[in-house]
Image (cartoon, rainbow, N blue to C red; front, top):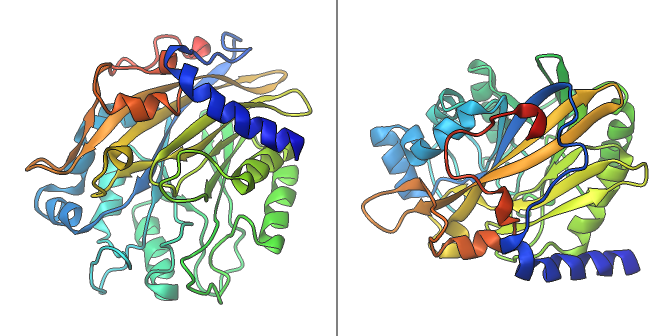
Length: 356
C-alpha cells in the first residue's frame, strides 16, 4: 500500500515539472536491431464524424497524423466500438461503424487494433463476430476479442523484421452488457487476470517484447486509480515491456517503471481520444505516442519515447485532428501528462533509431 500511495504522489507531483522534463531511458544508444511503434487512443466516432467519414473518407478525420503513423514500423489504435455491416450505424450510447473505417485505418498505416473496450458488446455477440470478420477481410491484426464459439486464445504475436511482438488487450468492463459467450478478455476478473499473468510468463521467453493494452480507469480523470496502477505494475513485473491504456477520454500520465528484475519499462495510463466529437479541450487534446525498441544480446530494451502533440478540432466547420505548436493553449493538458522535452513537432521522427 505504501508503494502504491508513493506512486500516486509522484504522479501528481510530477505534473508541475513535466513541462521542463525530458524522459531518457538508460540504454537509449545501445546498438542492435531497432523498431519504432506508434500508439494512439480511442477511435470513437460520434455521428458528425461518421457523416464526414461517409462523405470524405474516414482518413480525412486524422489526415495530419498519417505521416507519423506511416513512418512508424508498427502502429496501434483502440477501436472503440463494433463494425457490423447490415446493422444501423449509430453513435453514443451504442456505437456501430461501417467497415470502411477499418480500411481507412489500414490505409493510414495502422497495423493492429484493440477490440476489447467498454463498447465492444454494443451490438452484442454478432457485433463482435462481424467486427472480427471485417478486420480479417482486410488483413488488419486485432486483439482482445474472439468469435462466438472460438477457443482461440486472446493474444496476438506480430512478426516484424527480426522482432516478435506479443500484444494482449483487455477491458475493465463492457457497460453492463453480459459477456455470456466469453468473447471479451477482461483485465480485472479473477480468471481472466490470472490468464493474462500466466500468458505473459509463458510468452516472455518466446517473444522479444510484450505490449499490454488495457481499457480501464475512470472517465475524464487526469490521474490513474489504484486498480490501474496495481494492474500495470503486476503485468510489467510478470514480464511485459510496455503498458498503453485507454478509456478515460483524457490523457493520464506516463510513468517510467523499473521492475524487480531490473528492466526499464513504462506505462502510459491513458492515451486519451484519438478522434471523437467530445467537446471540452481536455477531451480533444491528445498525442501520437512513439517508442523505440532495440534488440540486443541482453534482451529487448526500450530506447526512448517521443510524442506528437495534437488536438481534435470538432467545434467548427472543420472536423479533423490538428498538430499543435509549442504555444497552443491545449499544450496545458499534454504537459500535465508527459515530459515536454520528448515532444516532436516535425514529421522527421527518427534520425537515429538506435538513439531514439
